[in-house]
Length: 109
Image (tube, rainbow, N blue to C red; front, side):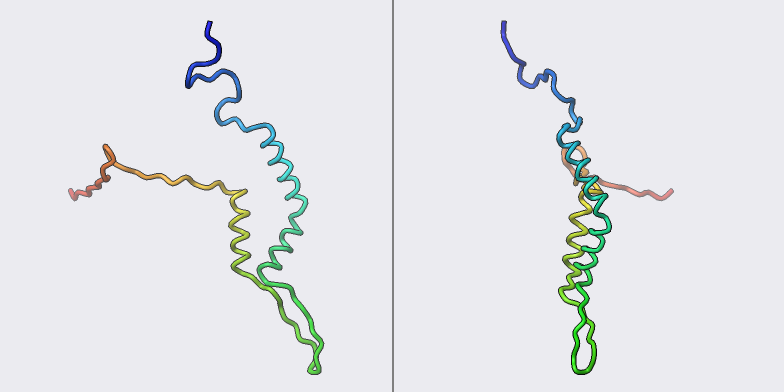
């Protein structure tokens, strides 16, 4: 009597699309971590975007300025964080029969 499954045959295991238990637990732990750090994340993003405000005493008085502002870094960080909230869309190509181009015709009555 042969043992094992035939090529392409599935026996047991998770159904397709069912999340892995460890993955689900890790996502939940990460979500809880982020929920507790919202204010700190907001402050850190503010520093990346606008830099750190400094005050310097000079002979002419107090000078206020900002160091290390990085708007590009801010946008890059927002883009990376967005991947955790907004799913990436898969690219798709629409083709006609046998891979030919799709032709649209608009006819007047």
